[in-house]
Length: 69
Image (cartoon, rainbow, N blue to C red; front, side, top):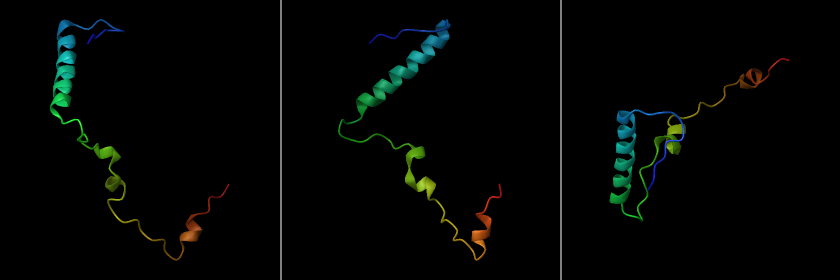
């Protein structure tokens, strides 16, 4: 694997930190079984959207839907 810096001029410390992250992610990916799904991202969890019930419209809800021009 080759890593190439395309822009900027990182210091040796910045480059070492970036490579440490890449190596840690690669090691974690190698430890996971190939058939198992990865950890689920909380942003894509449908339960996050429907965490609380949606209120039902009241008797005058139709009046709040009008937007005067």
